[in-house]
Image (cartoon, rainbow, N blue to C red):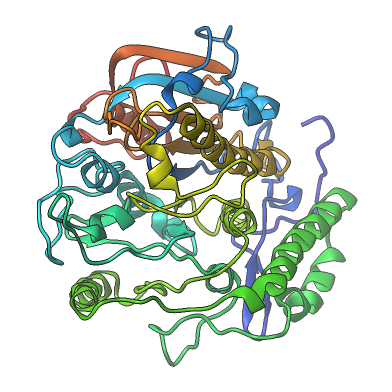
Length: 468
């Protein structure tokens, strides 16, 4: 760093701002740098986020032109132009253990496990594996406030899909703590924010976070002012930037609060399935899930997604967690995308385009919307300083889907992008073409390795993907 701020004292990396009912972990400050350290901060943590998009992509508008660093982003990927140098677009990957069975559920539930799920119509589900986020959380999650965060924007789907004779529960989960214990997504921005920044009741460890009408910034303001008196100009500016970022997310959540409702119309049989599953989840996670049945925010779809992503970014920036997953939707998601200009209808229905030009155009617009949200998150991470570089430089942000083309449920050459440098361990700014012979699991072996979590085998892979 050209202008390193020297301090007469060192602040702990675990230091947090505190007040009655709130705790805000801090981003990396120069005051946390070892007094006699040389060069880059030696303990810049690596973070990993896995973002899942349902229903595949329009294949002829996805793949970039050219290979290596001489590539052009495709029409769908064009929103990523500003962060192109931070991308590794990977073509030709396949999740081989998930090739048989239904085109959606087998591919969604096993997206991060690379295993073959058990076929069932009830709550006795099994992925036959542990997802890579939870492998990482088990290994390094003890170093942070939260071992992992599971976020999304659609509630859990229940009941049975009679077309394929499978429980819809498989379509709502990509994170698996144990083979029979999926971790549900928190979809309410307020609950996710409170879990990150507000304190839980000491007398009720298994209760949801305490909520308050008082801003968390106001709660910790005295502590922040006290800390500023010991900080240099650079750290003071960074602390102000952080507090404003938290406050901005909180303001947006309050603005949308009146639009938030809860509950779903669930049949008695489906409720029994969920109840049985939730009992297993509570037992395995000791009641840590705040959204077992899922609350149903009725927010603007774009703002909803971006709020959740901003919360994820804040969690990474403050090192409150290093592992997170995010689901844009469940398998066979029929979310309406009529809020987009030129789109009239629901996601899953439009993905079955039958090569109809009008439906293909709408399918492409839905895909592009997803990429726009991904680009939003990456830009936010690129703009945030982290140790000796940026938050994006010190992260791996995976984006993908379990199938290639929603019209034919193709499981080969599935859309996959890995952004971020993992602290200089990944060579980005490239299109890596595996010539349709790459294993998705081998990519995961490499990602875990860069988190400092070596593994002997993931799915069908024992070695990392060549070229990453």
